[in-house]
Every structure is written in C-alpha cells, then in structure tokens.
Length: 334
Image 1 (tube, one colour):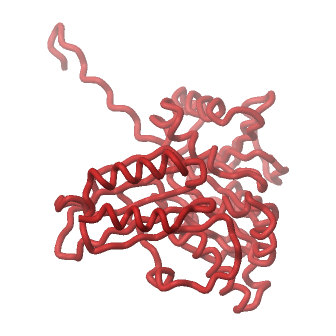
Image 2 (cartoon, rainbow, N blue to C red; image 1 turned 180 degrees about the horizontal axis):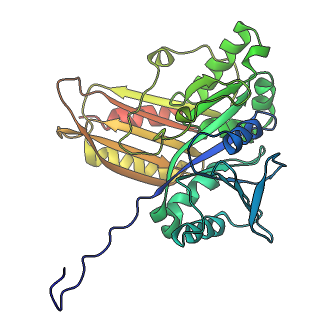
Image 3 (cartoon, rainbow, N blue to C red; image 1 turned 90 degrees about the vertical axis):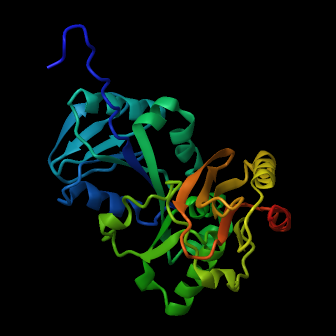
C-alpha cells in the first residue's frame, strides 16, 4: 500500500507488437498463404491487413463497417482491408486492442502484387506513434518459381520485392526442374544474399518460419552464404543487386561514419536495405548498422570473444556503384 502523498510508479509501456510484411508478385501464392493463416487453428492471434480482401468460407463477425472492414475469424485472427492510410488503420487497431475490443499478438501486412514494400516498411520508422507501438520484424517475399524469371526481367516491382526481403519463400518449385530452380536460386542470391530461401507448397509453411525472423533487429546476426562471396554465375542484367564487403581489419569509426553518411545521402533513394556487423576502433563489442533508404540506425552488439574480428557489410539496391562502395570502405579500414 502506498504511503499518503506518494505517487504510484509510472506504468511501463507495453511491448511493441511485431509486424511481418508479406509481399510477392501477382500469382506467387500470397493469398493461399494468408487464407491458411486466417483459417488454420495455430493458436496465434494475428491481425492480417490486406489490400484485396477475398471471400473466406467460414463464419465471421463484422466488427466495423464502412470503408474499412475488420473481420474476426473463428480461430482468433483478425482480417482488415485497407483502402486508405496504413498509419490510420494501425492506429485504429491499437485503440481497439487497448480498449479490449480486439485481441491480437502480432500483425501481418500483405502488399498488393504490383507494389514495392519500401513505403510500408518506412511507415514503422517515420511515424513516432506507430514506431512506439509496433515493431517491424521482417519482410517475407513469395517468389513464383515458374514465372519468376520473366517477372524479374520485366517488372521493377518484382525485383524490389526480392531486394527488400529478409526471407524468400519459393512457391511452385515442384513444377520446375532442378536446373531451372538452381538458376533461380543463384539469381535471387545475387540480388539479395542476406535473405534465406525456402520452398513452400500451397502455403504450407510453418508460421515459425515466417514469424520472429528478427530481420529488422539491429542485433540480429548477419549471415551470408560464403559460397555467394565466391561469385555465383549471374548472367542477368538485374537493376537490383548487392554489394558485400568483408575484412579482418578494424574500421576507423570516424571515417566509416562519414563514408556511410555520404553514401546514404547520395544513393539513399536507391538503397533498399543495408546492414553491417563490424569491428570498429578496437571496441570490445560488435557495432551493428542497419538502414532502409535514408533511414539508418546503429547500436552496440554482442561482445567479441575468441572468434576473429571479421566485419561484414551488405548493401542491396538499384544500380549501386559497386566500385565506389568497395574502395570507400577499404579506405575506412585502420
């Protein structure tokens, strides 16, 4: 019991709600995956926000009518259509959650098949209220193994969806031969070496594979297939590509900060994702860098132990100046 005249301690803010952005070109299987999430009894309470709300063949209760629809499914999920501002619908969902009218533990946002996921991802960094109540976990991109080659050749949006991805889910892999699948996987790795690749069949993906990926967690590990650095044979002229830099020498922190800042100022519009796990100025801990376009953050990571102090940086974007980036980073080493 509090003594007379004392104030109760301030309540700690609730933990942010994790958000997954689900993207992929037309026909890649997003709707199949979403319908499974919305109908399967997986024990998760998930708010699914999608632009094109299709018919769901189960009983549901309409909670909000008007331009937006919020429909509660019988497995505890919520499905919303968005025809307006994403910030507004996220705010409305949070208000209903705070009031006890809706219960959900995480959010999945589906982008339309022709959309680039960048503006959706930026929402969680640019709006202060949204960034306090929601935490962007990952961008998950579905890729149609049958039609991906042509889609990547002809559509910038398809390339951008791959470039932004933390995880790539390859659908319809049973319809292509091993050579065609291997060529697609090499192409995707050349475009985005930091995204893991996994085959899916009719949306039968364990939720654990697409949730809590921690792709936007600054302290999450940066893992890149060493085989990619050896140089995959890549004969496509994709505008989306990657630049990977590794070194066993420490960076000069001041030089590195100036150089990265300059790269972001000049090429920010074309930089989709970039991340680094770096040894800097003999500091006993890793320095973690991550950014989306011109929005960038850095933080201390795990301490260095007995392992070699190897720095790795990856930049993913459109028509990046590979030689400038590589030479500039080399000059930032001590």
